[in-house]
Length: 180
Image (tube, rainbow, N blue to C red; front, side, top):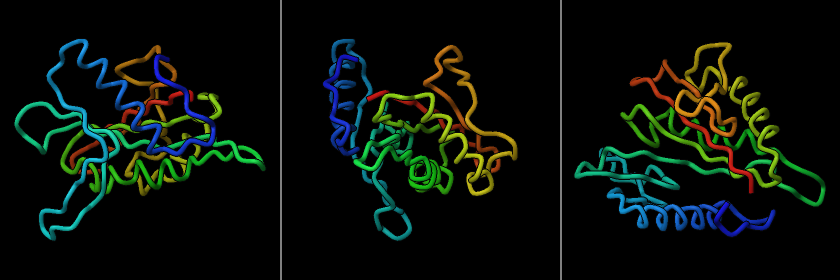
């Protein structure tokens, strides 16, 4: 709420930069000792090639392999011909990267931030849930599950979670739907 509102046509990298800047300012005011990175490169140690870039990364301490990563995606984007949900991109281009180990390999927690461009977080979450259920097998989830109430913030409907127990190690993804 404190950050400048992007336009409905703003692209995800710029929105992510604005969000990270706001988080860093809040962190400095509270004198917190973790680092917030943006577009952090994850390399494959076997091949030396770049596996991907994590949109927002929280690191604390000396071990660079322990972090909390957020992948950011736009949802409910307004176009001249109407609104596109982009829930498939959220799942295939975001969640799947955690499940396959492209992001947060070996870690048990990760996060997704959905920038809801039309502000309708309820519809965005409903469409993401439908897409998650369609991708249940590739996401290594138990059939019949989907977006669930957050165990950390059960009274906050814009924060949800998914569990991926068939991935080794088991993974919990925390989903935050931010009205833009």
